[in-house]
Image 1 (tube, rainbow, N blue to C red):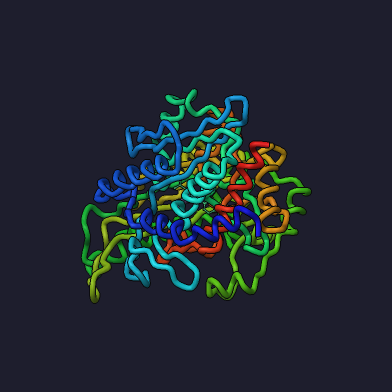
Image 2 (cartoon, protein in one colour; image 1 turned 30 degrees about the vertical axis):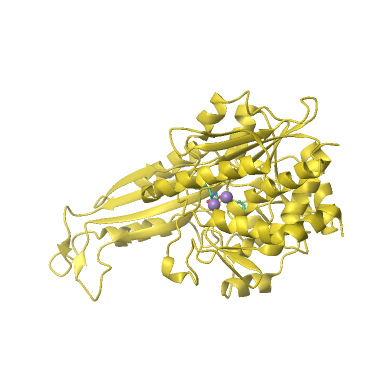
Length: 453
Ligand code: BES
Ligand code: MN
Ligand code: MN
């Protein structure tokens, strides 16, 4: 057993208890009702930074929720690593589908169940424990700066301004983020690309008030029927998006990279079984792993309108609504895609309805280098602790600040995450495997050690 492994093993109860305490804060950034909890969570994070031995710990205000900062400067001539994470979490609903309350963490079958356990509290906290180990063992041989933000799940709206204001303070050689997943514990991987995001809300209005569906139905266009038809027309049978010019700017992935991707293990039977679906969906020309990583998508996230109460009410509603997101790939620009969507959506609306389109937050796609020192250190660290070379792989989620960091600070990121796609992040019963949490701490010890060489 390696030295780090035995330290982690010896302290695992403490490490788990501290994570459980962190997970008790309902730090839901999307819902203003939790403002006090988000702020107390920031305080807890800063207390833990102090406790592990970071210097200049500070809760830095922004126009939104604060960023918690801490650093350890060992020797200015050594490389500096900027570790990023987020202490905010997604809302917990639908709450009735949780088998234990989302903010009362429990460990069951080797998994910690709680909102935020994998996304991202359990993941950024591994850095705190790794740094604590390195400091106590006198093994930290590089400089470290930590920023843990509180608005990632709502689009990191104020982070760019923060980064611009504190450009000097944030100077670093590389950024490390643990907020992604691996293929599996048997097939470790490092994320090398993330999709961007354009998020729209649409409102379709028919008549100026709800009508009796018998008296008016047949002569007045129903906005819900209309919205459904409009949405259905946005994709063809193959899943290809029909918005004109949607694919124009996409940077095609090279045959080499696609060939490398096709080597990543993927078990179709297991995939379908896990989701209880009989068949997968999407573009026939691309594999499932490609469909969820190097191809853009369009999905309805929510749709509502009319009567949804008990029993039947015969009504021809006045309005229908939907939230629609598009995952984007390099070089799609979310402002441009939002405009294309809006123009197209208005153009397909029949004359008997009016359409309003409101864009929500968006985000840039990212591709991270595999030639950097940081990637090599991450690769080496995984080799040491997993005994296998990690597979570089693009995945489908979004962390828009990766490209923002590159644009504003000029720094590349390595996405060294330890989650699994099955962790149910953003879903009921989100969990993080205890094994991954402990393995992550050990691997991050090796990562920081490699960076100091
Ligand atoms: N950690 C996730 C992103 C993620 C998850 C990337 C799993 C890769 C694998 C992050 O917290 C997240 O949820 N991002 C949002 C985007 C944001 C703009 C709200 C997303 O992907 O929906
Ligand atoms: Mn996250
Ligand atoms: Mn998330």
